Length: 153
Length: 153
DNA sequence: CATCATGTAGCTTATAAAGATACATGAAAG
DNA sequence: CTTTCATGTATCTTTATAAGCTACATGATG
View (spheres, rainbow over the protein chains, first blue to last red):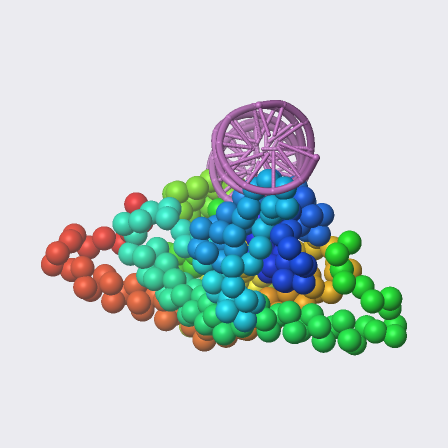
């Protein structure tokens, strides 16, 4: 199973959007994410529906943040994407009446639920602002060794 | 993405194997797991290579446990399956030179690593024997309400 | 030697993210 | 008001991988 990179991509896009003045078009973001404008619109749609970003049509249109990065957690983004499946492993449903299968699934389900809880708790504690500052730290670390690279491709 | 059910299936199969006298053929296990004998062999191969089960060819052959259920943890099984990918979400590699993407992936990677650690720790603490006893508990709970169902289909 | 069971190669199927094309909708510029 | 630009969305194709399946080789038992 190839992993779902939508969360990572949206975080990436949102931080770039914060550094731009004015709206970012789907085409610009697609360039940063090395993908297709339609994929950007499709993925960003959930964030718009949750009020995290706004979209404007026509000249000068595009995507803009609807609140500061410090007012968005990684969990907000994850949930706005529809809380996609977290785990690549899961229960079996080969013989749902089998008490052995039930016991296995129950036990495994508890372990996965605990891990899910750990992960979502952490995603809820980190804001996009924190991420942006971690980016700034990288930027400073690289100065003097690299040309000032903002990573916008 | 459909989730990988190999871990659940192998736990299911191993507990049934413990309750049988003699070897379990791939065809018998495939019946319990509602799948194909070849899938059973393919999945069981990793467990055999790790010394958790043995296989015998010919008449009376099949699969047998190589140690007691109390001497196998869920983590042992997970690792014998090749430690398959745990998470359905993951980093992006759209623009590996981008410091924003790097910061996002690093942060997300730490959160996932923490969740992975939580999960594997737990898998390492539960033995197949524990699972078998949980099955027994279910069996007792159901007695009087259901015919004694072992779940073998 | 006939039968049974594993071992394994190779192909097909199912599923979901991702990518791409086409076109409708709506907003701003001229 | 018409052109241009950008989103919104339907639809199809592509890709990756677990899973399923067929066929046949290998080896052990009776």
